[in-house]
Image (tube, rainbow, N blue to C red; front, side, top):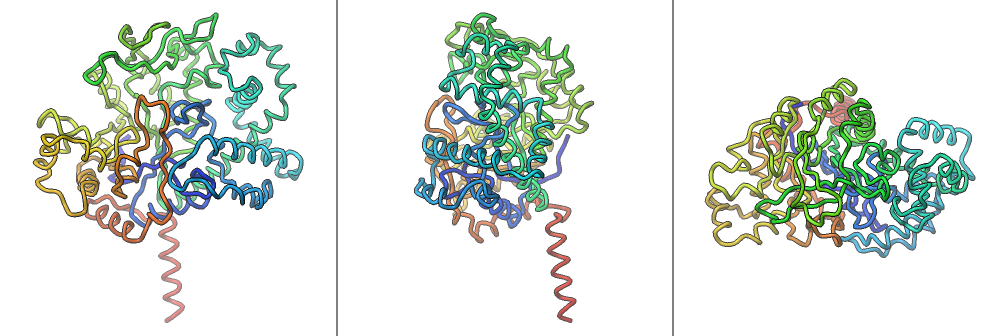
Length: 521
């Protein structure tokens, strides 16, 4: 569906400031929403919100439907009485501008388990009923996820296909045994999801009241070591003996990589998913759209055709293109959910069938300004080649910051940028690119927060292909000053991207101001 002309900022919640080592769903998230509101923005784009494992990548989650417990606000838990203030006092010596995931995971999980235990022992009848209702409403994914995480801890963090054979294959007797054996640990995991979803719902309501829509992210593939694959192996191409992927996801060799990219995620059994009415996928979209207003589909082209690499291959060279039932899927999804607020990540090798699928359902595609300045005037990422139904980015989480990107160009590439723009302003190349995105005809313009600050490569969020050291950047609270708010608001207005209808919060402010003025007359 096409979206109105608007503007927004890409920032994952882990990058928010916090005294506890990682951004969370507490006050700093509300302060960021206030910043978006003050600066005329209408979109907060986040990365996938699921629980992360090795490498801390939001795109390799233990569940495609659960929330990440590490984002739970510890202050919120203390306000509820499940943690004590003195237990939080020792957490204030974390780095201010980087996430030390090893420390954060250990310290936070210990406190989260303490909170879960106190809830089990001290919750009121009313609180227990609210919790019980939550668990019932999320049973499709929550029961499997909670047991999966309890088992993962029981087996020392091993992947599910390395567990004892009976439980790895979800044999009923083994499932019943471990549900009994790990009852408390399972309840801990359910409580953490209960808290995550309560806190996130409160935050989303705060954002929507300010006229801010949250854009989420659905990676087309799920992690092999996930509750999704463990609980629903019939929907994935797996080796029946080992549980390893029999067909792996990736992309073929291209200009950037002579061997392609081998991601290792198991490929879907689309025939079985379709025979089941795509019910698993519909549940996944339902779970995501409870958390966000809009959703970007990562690797959208995989819904039309996907690159499948056989088990045992070490590169993506020896794969083949296979068809996916994308048209049938989106038709079924629309019948179940109604309007589909989807953005298609259509980067990479986009063949006519992929563009046709995107356009049939009026999904906006993506444009990246960093990709615009080679290949001549026909480059589809140059702004004069855009249509309206697109989202333009300066760069994404997978790109360098605009300052870092510009500094990395050789003299000829830099000259191409200067020739196109005519000149650069004294504000810096990052502001030139923000304005270039805002001034385009694309309905939505989004840029990473790092670009608003003019930060260089050390603030980059992710280096694709690098397994460690990503996802750690954080900003400091004093970065969101009034001058930045005013400048963003000014440019957003110049390029016609301010809200056309006042947000509920704005209406209240206007009514209160009018009432105050009337009282003084």
